[in-house]
Structures are given as C-alpha cells and as structure tokens.
Length: 469
Image: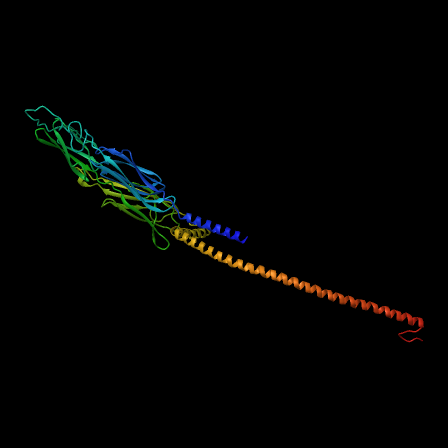
C-alpha cells in the first residue's frame, strides 16, 4: 500500500512539471504581408498595393523604392491600400515594417515584409524619355526607306500631353511654352509627344525628381536633318500639405511624472480624428506636444485644460500662409489650415469602496505584469521547487517507513507483554478467591458449634451468660 501511494505522488508531480513546461512554449502568429494588383508594370505605370497585419495589431509604415507611393497607419488584424506609380526602369520594391503586438503572446515584436514589381518596357508604344508619332518611344532604326535627295527639317510636334495633368494653354504646334500644376504626391510626370514628321525623334529632360515649386521640363524634337526645336513645360509641384509631423499627449500622474496617453488610432499625419483612453478623475489638463511638418506654421490648441467629467473635445488648429513665390502678380496669398480633433472621456471620482477595489486591482495588475515579464524564470523556479519537494518527499517516505516498522515491532512486543501480565493476574486472582472461600467456610462453621452449646445449656437449665434469680 505504501508503494502505491508513492507511485501516485510521483505521477502527480511529474504531470505538474510537464504542464509547467508546456506553459513556456508560445506561438508567435503575428505577421505583415504585402500583395500587389500586378506582378509587372510598364514604366510610369500604376498598380495597387495592399498591406495586411494578421494575428496582431500595430503601426505599419510602407515605403516604395524606385516609384512613388507609401502609407503609414495603425492596423488591427486589418489592411490598407494605396496606389503606387512605377519608375522608368528596373523594379519597384515595396517594404512594410512595424512593431506588432501578437494576439497570442501579447508581446510586441518588429515585423517586416517586402515585395518587388518588375518594370517592363514595351517593345513599341509609349515612354517618358522619347517618342515618335503615336507614342512615348519609337524605334525607327530598323525601318528602311528609299534614299532621299533632301532630308526633312520638320522638328515640330503634332501632339503633346502629360498623363498626370492637363497643360495650359491648349496645345498648338507653333506654341512652344506651356504650364502644368501637379500635387505634392507626384514626383515625376510622363510626357507623350507625337512628331509631325515620322522621321523626327523626341527626347524629354527634367521630368523626374521634381522639386516643390517650379520645374522646367524640356521636350526636344530633332528633325531628320538634325535641326531641333524645344517645347517647354513649366511644372509647378505643390508644396507639401500642411499637417502635423508628430503628436504626443501626456498627463501628470499623482507623483508629478509626465505619462504618455496612447492615441486611438495611432498617430498618422493624414488621420484627423482620435480618441483617448478614459482619463482618471484627478487629471485636470493635458500636455500637447505637436510638431508641424512645415516651418513657420502656427499651432493653436483648444480644450486641453480644465477637463470636465465626461466627454471633452480637444482641437489642434494648424495655419500657414501660401508661399508668395508661387503666386501671380496682384494675387493675394491664401491661408492654409487643417484641424485635428481628440475626444477625451474623463472618469467620475469613485466611491470609497470603488477606490479600495481599484487599489486591489492595481496590486494584482502589478503582480500580473511582473509575472508577464518574468514568466520563464517563475516556471523554471517552480520546476526547481517541485524537484526539491519530490526529493524531500522521497526521503521523508523512506524515513517514515522505517519508523513505521519500529512502531509495528513495538506494538507486537507490547501485546506480548500484556498477554503475559494478564496470565499472571489471572493466577493471582484465583489464589485470592480460594483464600476468601476458605475464610468464609470457617466463619459459617463457628456459629453451629455455638448453637449446640446453647442448646445443651438449655437442657441442663443453666445459662451460660448472665445471672438467674
């Protein structure tokens, strides 16, 4: 029976140790993935990029190499998309990265993903670099024409268009200068030039890496005889739209320390509305750290002080005047503005019972956080304690079993001694009873003799005791 108990205890301790070991094995399922609507694209072509976060949540930033596009946003097991414009040659590389909190482990880790889209030049058709009649590029070197006595000197265009916008004024072959305004997001334009003479060639310069403000794009037409003419496009790239480059909200805790309050969703310059987690009842104001993306912009914050119980609205207004360099004569600069809104809910002051409950929750939360940070050490320590306990229990059982044998031996000895004592006691009691029986018999016999003596005296008329008158 003792061995069965020991086997059961060993089985239970082994099972506990195995369960604790399994607790250390965790899966990391969070990931970032990228998909594109096209695997290859022509120079200057566009395609859609979709970035997804699976099994977690976090802020993901996507950048594009050898192309235009990109986006930054907070993804919670979701995705976002944007349009990407390819460069002129090679391949477009899309890279996404961010710190993602895994749903399973509840820990953050850096995740990344990348994807490449090839840029394939068409065998005939359009090109942003040069073109002949009907396209962006032409290759007439393989054509054979009868020898002409006189080469053409026609270096004019019969058509001129830009894919990213409409030039002004309307194209005419004799007008050599045009204007075009494009948004800040566009850094390169694709020019389509059609020559009047099929033997003429076209080259385009200055259409890539456009800077903010005015840029000059030159379309050079070379006639068959080598003579040239230039068409000029004045391209004005808009200034980057006014926005916040960073936004941090902080509040003072009861120790006077500034604590950052997380925004929901995570800050992105193009996201204008946010909410804050519920603020404690003792928070009276918030510290707003807002940095604009344009030097000279002014920031006005409203509603960050004297916070009331319930919902509060904080408004951050940015303003900047339009750059006068890009204005025409007698044109007044305009004011560019943008506003960010933050909804803040402030808790009510709790009752005494609620405060006590919160205190206990805080203590338990501290213990829980400590365990999350030291779970592996705790499990290793628990396994060590189990091993020590198992060893101690084994030693105890061995010693206890020896003691058990001594007790059994002592009990047997006591039973034997008690049996001997009982035998001696029975003999002694038998002797005593016999003596008592003899004494009783003697006592009963004596009165009979006395009675005979009295009777004899009576017969003789004599009294043995007393006097007779």
